[in-house]
Amino acid sequence: MPVSGIVIKCQPGHAGELGERFAAEEGIEVHGVPDDTTIIAVIDAETVHDEVQIVKRLTETDGVQDVRLAYHNFEDLSAVET
Image (cartoon, rainbow, N blue to C red; front, side):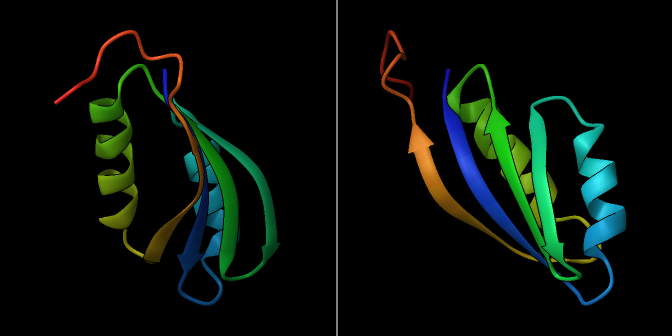
């Protein structure tokens, strides 16, 4: 089960509304919205593939400019995924 800390950069004025929206989604925990362009979150997914799909969905969301990985832990995966 991979866990990743991410920083989501948003267009000015969108972080608050997007932070609330993302917090309601499965697999995403929003830990803070320090300003109107930044969301600090954690992705907790079943597989690396699921995690990649969440990041892809985030990056394709209107108002999101970038999603950056700050931390990634996947040492409890029982098998290497391709």
